Amino acid sequence: MKILVVDDDPIVLDICKTFLLNIGYADVHLSQNAADAIEQIDATRTPFDCFLLDIKMPDKSGIELIADIRSRPVYAFVPIVMSTAQESPQYIAEAFAAGALDYLVKPFELFDLETRMHAIEMHSFEIARWHRAHATAGAGESLPQHIEMMKQRGAMKKLGDGGLVSPIAFENCLLQLEPSSGRKLNVVALQVEDMDSIMRRLSAERQVSYLSAVADALVEQVGKLKGLVCHKGRGLFLLMSYVDLPDLNEMVHRDLAKVFAEMDEAYLRCCGLRTRVSFASASYAEQPKDTWPLHLIENAIGRLGR
Image (cartoon, rainbow, N blue to C red):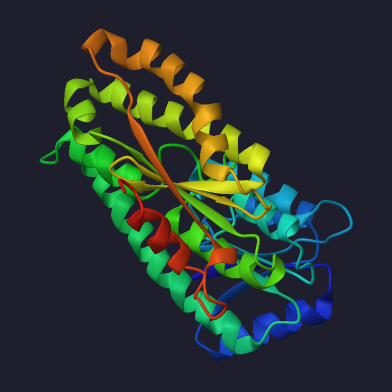
């Protein structure tokens, strides 16, 4: 993989490069600020496969740099790992909302970096496979199947566009937030019922427009809740919040009812359909203290329809 490490600390850059070379990554590039990083990105003929960015930099933050990187189409889905000494939930959530795939808290163990890099290689393989399928969509692969693949990859919109993240990033953020946010983590599972039936009744163009509208509505909602949203596929969305909200289900249902009614008018009324959704939530505070954070997702999904 071709890797660009951006950090204003030359010692960190030297350590990262030496370690990455030692574990088999031979094509490692370094930059001490965002401006130089963008110059390297625009000058290279072979795109980078991965970015490791420091958040706290003097001229432009790593979170701002993510936006610059994602604005270039070739890097819409390239893995980005953030590193910083900041452990506050706000910093972590902002990094993932901006488009990060993973997050390392300084000082980090080199073993943790190696683990992240191996996971990124697998993720990059999946993205490359998706792009190959994207290039051949329509040639032997039906458009609805192709759109379903897009949904599975969180690709209805650019990753990081307003808080919509991939399922992998959602899980990574949940793992990072757990030790820093205490017992305030909440996960809401939202299922759009009869999604398959809705998709069959809509044109290919309206399928993507409708799903994007749903995602937009949820992104706006989690902005109020200080969190993230991801699409797991087949109309199942997950919302994450790290603030203490005892009436989270009621709040989400109340705020989204009007939004879904407007979407139905725009996309589904012509087909005689309407959006029906079910909600369920799980709070870390109600789990046993040794509960793995990802069990919140399983618990929220398991409560749907009860």
